[in-house]
Image (cartoon, rainbow, N blue to C red; front, side):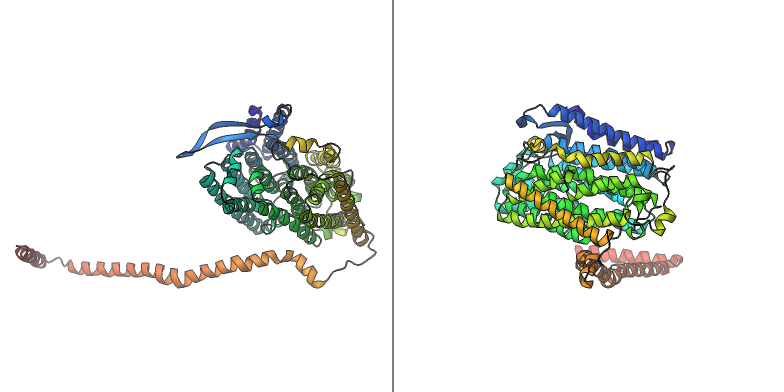
Length: 627
């Protein structure tokens, strides 16, 4: 069992080393197959680990394996330890399974691109980093994976180094995530100080500390989760991350990086349960994010940015789930979201690929006639995203709303936000679908559309989309709250739920969520397909949404401009006149001293004899005075 876990972790790292060391001796396509094979091996190993873990009793589904002790300080010793339990296996299956489909898709999408080998090395590194994060046997190793995920995302978002916008987006993502990394590191310092360990089982010991310490640790962990999962207020990096290639967007926004925050809260749930105020805060942040992101998505014109804001919104639902203590519900939605969100990104990639790289929805239209298979796959992903039964999103998202309703008065506010989010999801999702696929083909689409040997894309691109479409349709059937709950039962030993929804809460949540989602679809059809009404908008509201509620401008005013002014002032008033000026003055004085010494070197013997005699006389006077 543990051998399978190690194979799952090491396989992508092996691909990174092989591609890097082989260099120019292999082509870009060969590098793609090496990366794809490695992630597929990881998935097979994860399946083996799952099958072997499944028969065990829930209390004993917790296994650690240490390769060696890689860090020690005093009484503290941290091993290169991996953990195999229901939560880690669940994430291993998602990361390696969906990741392998995305890497396979990349073979066709990146065909002919410059630096293909570098791209696939980065992709394999990303998968390894994410597996390191979810398999880490202690918080310190988790932080290593956490940082490697940030580094990998920086490399992938900025893959097109020749574009200034891609480089800026990569820097922004790295810096925003570094804020969360710092808060996590501070929380770990507090844990070491008060519990003397960073092992997961010992997290329960934090309850013996003061309320202040517990809340600070929980806030530090929440800061890391919010930054990595792009929740308000550390969310502004995610839309800009669309500068990376489309498969990168699918990998980062579907099953891996942005879900790491949800996993972190579920993994360290003991800390949050001892700090209920912080746990409630995580749920509130999720509720606010899902509404705000849904509103901003309504005015986006870039197809990938609409899907990116959709990711923020759906992660918000997951935060609500883990924030109210329904950990399995949040993780279940993480799984279904991986299916339909990867599907939407990759289907959008087929459209972008067919239109020679165009991403502006205003230049699309009528593609249902030109790309019918892509349309049906995209429609399946859209219906799953909205949560229309029997698609996968219906089973997972509605269970989160029911759990929120079971939380009491506080949960009612979260439930209302979730229902509003369902309406917005239907509206922005089908606005995108109608603008891209319905109506008559635009002039741009007719002129620039091209097929791949008469098909809608290469086989390596289309088959992953088809597989994800099947998962988006049927993936949610694995659990139906109230009737059968295998996911919740499997994950319960790792994170036991704090709330349980009743039958009527399940029914009410499902009915309202579906009705509001369908209402959003209906409004989108009325405005963007039937075109029987003008799209209503107020200038200020439109401008506010287009500027994403002015978060970027706010951060620019609060952080960038003061920092730039301080740096400029320091250079002008301190560095140049004092630091550089004093250095210049020291240089001038040294030169003058040198000139004086040079003048003393006259070359006349009598001058040197006089100087020697003078020196001896001085020494005699000194010695005589001393006696």
